[in-house]
Structures are given as structure tokens and as C-alpha cells.
Length: 353
Image (cartoon, rainbow, N blue to C red; front, side):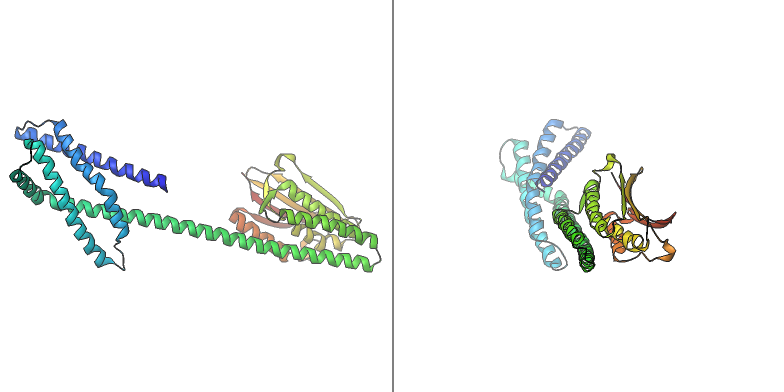
């Protein structure tokens, strides 16, 4: 903000220097045409001094524009006030302008010469200088409006980000209890079956799993290798209940540090077990992997089991996954679900840089 203000001041000052160059050149050409003897250097010095007065007045006029705005609530009062300010400032300017010409013209102050200069300048320049004042006021209002608009856009963007984070946290909060309740039910079911050692092992793994959840819950995005480690812990819990479960995780080392939404694979793996693996009596295989294409990182979960025609997959977990990808990546994040050989494949397409 401070840097922007300094830049604005420099631009305004350069404008008055250019105005001095332009008017001094114009006067010099008129002097030559009339046969006068004034040099361009002398005329530029005079114009430089008089336009620098406007350069000095500009901050004051900007302040007046900021302090006394012309808007819907104060239109007539603000306009009348600035007309008064304009008349006062322009008369003061013309007085200083006349003094400069007085001293440069005859080398000493003369009341008669001053009055003559003031009269000539008042009749010929008052309306132009009045217009200059109003132009500066208009510029001040435009800069203020742009700054207010930028602040409003920044506040709107910040609010949108906060809403997005809130929505994502809400979705993640829906995922964690969903998984936790299912796991606890599995532990209870295992205990009821008399498999206490299995239940004990599941609880130990559940504790490790929840520790990871707490550590990573504050991060919206985590490296892919952490997401896969998280899934490994989850599947270790499932393997206590399904000893025949064959887990295969394939991921190339070159994109292990690619950031992905935290806990994005867990609901897909949970769905794969619930709707696919649990329906099979043997050869229970689940495969999780990642592949990088030119523009996207593809994450997939494959499970052996019934085809899509014989099952329903669009539950809370998958719907939440779709919602999270849409909120993070927009239309660039996609979820595809299709039958493959003797099972089902879910693919996530997310952009990567």
C-alpha cells in the first residue's frame, strides 16, 4: 500500500513536469512568432515553478477529495464544498503565479504590475485551473473507488477461501466418524465371535491409525507417500478381519511427494471392501496405485468382486470424494468408476504442477 502511494505521487509529479515542458514549448513558439526575446530556458523555468505549485497542491487536493467525498449521500453538499475549495485554491494559485511573473518580468515587486498580471491570468486561466482542481478531485475519487473495490474483492476472496476450508473440514468430519464407527463395529463383531486376539490387534492398529489422523487432520494437502502410508494402516486393520485379503500398492517413486487432498483414498478403499471384497468368498484382492500423465496424477483403487451392474457404489464416501475434488480442483478434478475384468476400478484424476 505504501509503495503504491509513492508510485502514485511520482506519476503525478512527472505529469506536472511534462505539463511544464509542454506549456513552455508552446509559449516559446508563440514568443518567436511574435518576435519576442524570451528564451526557452527562461520560459521553462517559469512554467516549472508554476506547475510545481500544482505538484505541491496535489496532495492537499487529494486529501480534500478523501475527506469530503462526493457520493450519493453528500452529492450536493460535497460538490458545493469543492467548488468553494476550488475557487479559494485557484485564486491563491493565480496570486502566486502573478508574483512569479512580476519578479521575473521587472525584477521587483510592483503592485500595479501584480494587479495587471492577476487580471490577465484571472480572465484567461481561471476556468482552466478550476478544471484542473476538479480533475484532481475526480482522480482522487477514482483511486479511492479502485482501492475500495480491490479491498472488497480481497475480502470476498478471503471469505470464499474460509468457506471452502469450512466445507472441506465438514466433509472430512463426515469421513472420520463413518470409518470409526465401522471399525468399532468390526471390533465388537470380532469379540462376539470369540476372536479376542484379533480384536486386540485391531484396536492397536486403530490407535496407530487415529494417531495419523490427528497428526494430518490440520493439513488440507499431504504428500502422496503419507496418503499411501495412511491407507496401509487402514488395510492392516481390515486384514485382521479378512486374513485372505491380498493388498497390492503400486506407486512410482518419482511422484511420491506430489500433494494430494488428505484422506482422499480412504473412502474409496472402504467402498471397495464393503461392496466388492466382502462379497467374495475367495481370492480377495485390492490394488491401490498411482500413475502420472502429462497433466494429471491418476490415483486408482481396484478390487475383485461383483461388477457395477450388481452393486451400488454412490454412497456417502464416494459422494464426499467427488465434492472434495470439485472444491479443490474445480472441473479439473474427476472421478471415474467402471468395471474391469472381474472387478471394479475407481480412478481419481487430479492436476499436478
